[in-house]
Image (cartoon, rainbow, N blue to C red):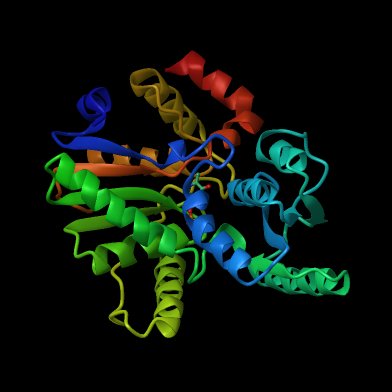
Length: 316
Ligand SMILES: *Cc1c(COP(=O)(O)O)cnc(C)c1O
């Protein structure tokens, strides 16, 4: 329970934090939960290479490079952007020996899918079997990670005597959102899942999460095929993916000081800022008195924004 943060921002409710940022040092954050299932599939099917795609500072790409290095697999990352400072996740992905293919910053998700397929063919020509992982690891395999997380969370809730909760998190490629909502459905948890978008809009995420869920149900006919419930807020994206306004950095700085928890400006900072802003305005879309903030990681995303963090330290 975040006592000081609840007092500061909770408006009479308790704010808890599920520390998915503490899953490991290099392998930290929500992508580890998805990669646990994806990597198992890679090993099972005899793959020798993991290939994935994302932004230059992608947490998912860094985590994939770390998993590959730990398992002795090769890794190729298709990254948007060029020649930026060697920092944060990008620095780590390079250290972890990922082969990097750079594509232009404006590359769309559909174009990335084509690049992934081409990469798989290139590896086949080199006599290697590649597993291509979609952006964010958000597919039918990856969402098992957050179905399992809900199982764990329901255990946490029992331990802390919580019955009805709101689960709050950042949504970017939709897999965490799909997994959490699927987990709530399958484990019959009394929970509202509120997903704060960091890119794209509400309609996109509601459809994407439903899609991931249908894909999972398609190969697991034993699952109930009723739709999952999704609640997305797209009001706190700010200037765009990977860009954040001063208010986000102020919240980052204040929470670090209050609770010793660091958020990042790309994902968790926007979700937490959305949560406390909605609470203050009486606009938070759940009445549960206990709120569980899913800290999905992302600490390395702070480093490319050092000067914005420094400016916030002077303000709050
Ligand atoms: C990727 C990511 C998210 C969003 O998860 P998705 O499953 O891609 O929606 C949230 N927080 C952090 C720190 C992330 O790296």
